[in-house]
Image (tube, rainbow, N blue to C red; front, side, top):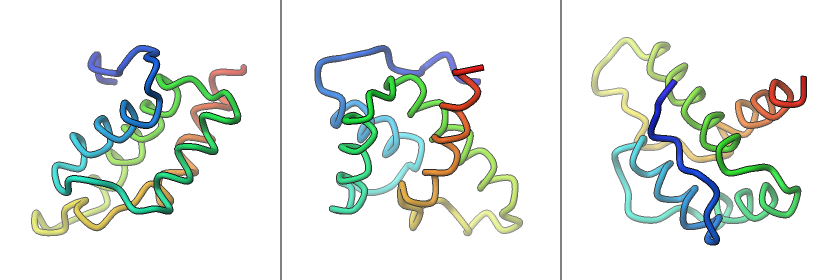
Length: 94
């Protein structure tokens, strides 16, 4: 697990966006669907650290499944990682 997970900040959307794009290592902005998903997480009160840990777990799993170095995460959106964020939220509640 990364020690670089962001702490709570006033700008939820920008923090999650920067974290995801830094791990994805491509792109400058997210899709409208990704922004909507981040807004849903914020509205549900999911802490940023939980969202970012889920994103990190999902990207790590995606990377393990790829056999070719060219199969990068560049086309991955947050919708793919939603299940990992939900799983991390459940773990945090236990």
